[in-house]
Structure formats: structure tokens, C-alpha cells
Length: 278
Ligand code: NDP
Image (cartoon, rainbow, N blue to C red; front, top):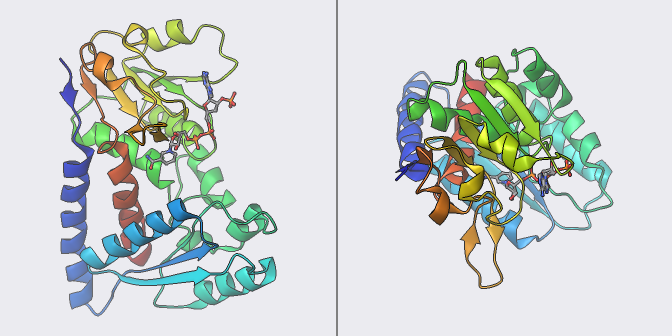
């Protein structure tokens, strides 16, 4: 029976540690500030933005939230980014994705000052991740590695298999684990024998977006399984990419969904903002 990795409790510990650091900075007359920009009325994005705003307040950070109409033009959004880049109270800027179709995401992300890019999506930070010199690493990938560290999982020399090769999760997780001296395999939709690859993993990271596709017969006895997936089933239940019930009987450790990687994403956003202020 696997140890369940309590991402909620770990994220809470991290937020408490951040709050102590924020209080220290405030005593020196500094306060980390995060600006979140939301364009349009996508309900999931609205929920994410509200949680980010709440998390900022809880740790004593300054926050500004801009809720712009779906009709906002690209030029207007770029002008707002310029203003936030110049705003001394703001150390981190996050533009909630996805953006409406008439706005080119890349153009907007490219405009954010890389020193304020707490989402870690700016090409300079993405490029620096390649050489392990990034100022900011994307929050979800960083959260995955932080979970392993906090659980005392040795990464060096281990065989890590990442299922998913997206720019925002799969690839950055793979690079982070490689920098930590894991032997890394990245799988995707064209991988020939996914089960065979997964069965090799000491550390298995699922970032696919397919409900419960990683089943116990794909997991090595005692492996550490990190489930990044967030999928809503027809009956309204939220599940990961891992079939939690069967996998927990075989894995050594496994993250639940919800309550695993999810809470870590916001904790890492706060950590990136704290580091941006320092
Ligand atoms: P993407 O859709 O961008 O990428 C999915 C990846 O999975 C692709 O590389 C795709 O391969 C691969 N894939 C799809 N089907 C299969 C298959 N049958 N076998 C093997 N590989 C497959 O998703 P994201 O990376 O953006 O997100 C992944 C999941 O993580 C989603 O559920 C998302 O909701 C969740 N997520 C959770 C976050 C959190 O805070 N916890 C944050 C971000 C995402 P190919 O490249 O060949 O198409």
C-alpha cells in the first residue's frame, strides 16, 4: 500500500514558510507584489485567479488583479504589461492563459519582463532552464520536484519516466529531473510501448490529460507516482491521469487528485514571487 503524498499539507507548510519570509521583508520596508491579468470570462480561469489572489493575501503579499473584458485588444493588453513591467510595487506578473483567440499568447508572454515572469513561460526563462540557470521555473513542474524533495525521494541515479511532452509540464519536468541526475525518458502519444516504458520507472510522472489512463499494470512495484492530470468526469468527479485506486496498491508513493500536485502550483507561484522581490 503506497504512502499518499499529501500535496495540500506540503503546500500549506510552504505557504507558512513564505509568510515568515514575507514578514521579514515587510520589516525591511519591502513587500512582494503579484499582478494577475485575466482577459475574458472563462469560469475555470476565474476560479484559478481567485485562488491566486486569496493565496497572495494569506501570505501577506501585495496583489493587483485586472479582470479585462473579452473584447480587450492585443495592443491594450501589451500596454498594460508595459505598465506592470514599470510598476515598482509589482515583482511578479502572471497573465492567465488561455487568452481569447484574437490575442497572440506568445506576443504577450514575450512582452513580460523576464525578471518578473513568475510563471516561467518567457523564452529567456525557458531557454535558461535548458542550462539549469533559469531565474523562474514554471510553477507546476517546480511543484512536482518540490513534492519529491519534501517526501525525501532520492532523484539522483533514478529512472524517471514522464508521460506527456507539453511545453508547460512534460518537457520542463523532464529537464528538472535531468538536472537532478535522473535518467529520463519522455513518452508521448506516439510512444510504441507505453506500458513497457512506464514499468521501468522509479519515478513516474503523468501529465497527459486522459482520465485514469495509468493503471497498476503500468507501474513498477514501489515506484513513486506523481499525477499532474486534472480531468473532470461526466459525473462531475475530478480525477487525475492515474488510476489512483489500483495504483496505490502497487506504488511506493502516489499523489492524489485533488490534493496532490494542484496545491503545489500556487505555492510555487508564491515562492517565485518572493524570489522575484528578493
Ligand atoms: P497537453 O495536452 O498539452 O499534453 C498532453 C501530452 O500527453 C502530450 O505530449 C501528448 O502527446 C501526451 N499524450 C496524449 N495522449 C497520450 C497517450 N495515449 N499516450 C501517451 N501520451 C499521450 O497537456 P498539459 O501538459 O497541458 O497537461 C496535462 C495534464 O495536466 C492535464 O490534465 C492538465 O489539466 C493537467 N495540468 C495540471 C496542472 C496542475 O496545476 N496540477 C497544471 C497544468 C496542467 P503528443 O505530444 O504526442 O500529442
